[in-house]
Amino acid sequence: VDEAQDFTPCQAALFWGSSATTYLVGDARQRIYLWRGAREDFEQSSVANDFKLSETWRFGPVIAEVINQVLGCTPGSQRVVGKSESPGTVVWPGETSDPQRRPAPQTVPDVIITRTNKGMFEELIQRIGDPEERVGPVPQWAFIDPGMQHLANASTFEAYLKLRDGRSARIAGEDFDSWEELREYAEDEGDAKILGVMALVETYGADLPKFLAQIQAARVDDWRGGTFGTTTAQ
Image 1 (cartoon, rainbow, N blue to C red):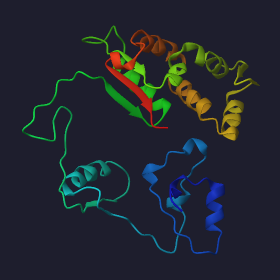
Image 2 (image 1 turned 135 degrees about the horizontal axis):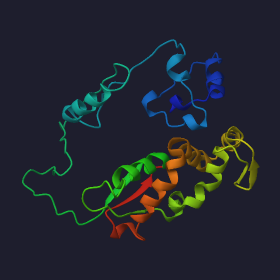
Image 3 (image 1 turned 120 degrees about the vertical axis):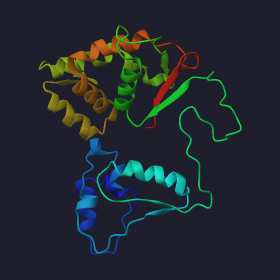
């Protein structure tokens, strides 16, 4: 069973309670479904045998060295060994993999891909920031996927902010009296969109309208005509 790090307690109980021989494959660092109920059963439950996969043929020792430096900043002692015949090349921002070739002029916009809507919003705030405190021009941006435009509209968050403030609100065609009631509904329905908006409201609270105004002021119609475009990997 692959991606076992994303087991919910219900799914985990099915396998831990089975007498059949089962091989589970997973990586706790790649757990992305906490919002859906994934928990730490994968690494906390006892198993008959625990095998560490530490060798990879996808890259060589040069890239492995950089990866191990990153892993050193996370819990655990797991490290990787690059077994590819090619040692690999680490290319830092602004550099080129061919030392004889000069980097081409930056004439095309950057593409920023984040794992979640919340991560994308944080990226926008970090890159655009407060125009009054910024040194230099404000970067212009747009969503690559037009279907995500609601995330930059203040109207998207009005009902959520109202509910978070303790007042009843109507969201997704349903009436809610409390924040926890909305969370329970979103988790039961598996509604990632609602959960994503809730995460933004919980993080930024009353400052959200101000951040949205700053982001909207720097937004352009087409990302190809701006400084960067953004989307998620979902």
